[in-house]
Amino acid sequence: MPGSASGSSEAFCSPADVRRSLSYLMPYLGPYWDRPLGAYASEVYSVERFHTESTTRVHARSLLRICFERAARRSGYTDKEAQAAGRELLACPVLQTGPHCLLLFEPDAFYTHLFSLMGLMAHSRNWHITYSVSTSSFNERAKKGPGWIRIGGETLNLFGLPRSRMDGGRIGCLNGPYRYALTNAKRQTAPNPSAIRLLAALPDTEFRSAAEAIKAGNHALWDRVFPPSVKLLQLDDFDVADLIADHLENSDSWMATQFVGDGVVAKSILAMLDQLNAGLWAGWVRQTTDFFWRLEEHRVVPLRLVMGRLRADKASCFEVEFIPSRLAAALRTRAILPSLFTAFLVISILPGTRVLGGCRQVVYYPLMRYLTSIGIQQSGDVDLLAAMLADERSGVWGHRVLLRPEPDPLHEMEAAGGIPTLLSSYADLALSRSSGDLESFTRDRMWSRLASAIANGTADRASNERQWFCC
Image (cartoon, rainbow, N blue to C red; front, top):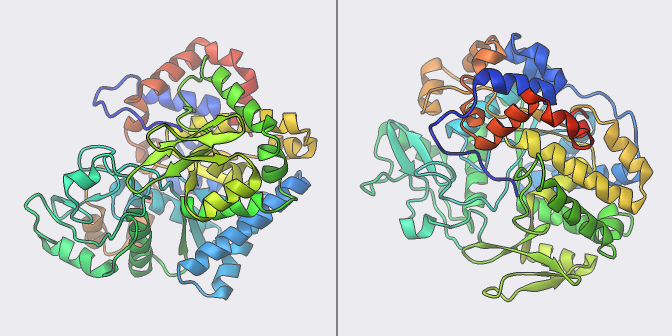
């Protein structure tokens, strides 16, 4: 699974290096650096009709539509609204996958949601559909990431959890209850007026997992502060687990008959991943687990595909046969969750959905498509491969393209008088200005190495992989 960018404060390459490298990998991006952010947002949400189809892709898109509708109903939308979300998928197959599972007013999430809202409103779209992983750790960085938010000048613990619950804990583990508390270092609940207002807007109930609580909190906040013309639909790994099970229980699915099948396609992908990690792209798609994670009470455990079984480490003593029926059952009962590669396979690569992501995703996602193409060649599905090669901008930069120094978006929104004012002011900024110093790129050693390889021409020799950045 791809890693996060380096937390170092040292810059390893310059913003100019990053812009040049991004324009090399994604040629469509170059003309937009000096254009308004609103124009770029409109472009990434502009999707032409599918030019090349395949039976596999049509089937995968049908199952994804069902997943969207099911997730919408779980979120409290009516049947009519859920069906509208499914129809919009077919008209505008775009997912925002950049932010992790963060509360709406956490800066890393808030400004990305604003950017997506610009693009959606430019095309009169009605659904902002997001995906975030549920295997993230609470302790991404000290007092940042899931479980934290800065409100009213103070960094607050979303659920008032002790350090013992947060260190190494995973937000998707079903080890609740979790209840919003917004406590500071002195264990005071909602210690300032802004925190009091925010806590009042969040659900006053208990949840089985932190991921579930954050989803419910975001839904409540979106309905309260964002334009009613655009509805929020959040997918996570539990939704995707059911989607994968739908595939595996269906004999018409490529996932069931080929990807799992007799194991040959899956093994070919793992073998190519080993080769990928021995060259220019080493580290971008890390083999932290083989396709799925084992979900336990307080942790997620990597699995390895060995002799037709997915096996955990000795401490876990878990294993499951790598056959469709057994995997589907394990997914339905939440014994396992998908890896990021497997999730992207069913929400994007197979159905042909465009995904918006951040500094690491704009590299690892095309490489995931390349790995999938190896498996598809092994399976002999030439129509699916042709459809993938005909994709236009399947993965684009859409996270932290609006990067603001403001550490408290709630305060900024209230001072501005609401979301519409912020949208209007930010939409006119040039992309080169809105994205700031690009620190998520410049402080990442892997991006520095890639930028150097692009500058000296080394990346040109990796043409087989690079072609997937351009489609």
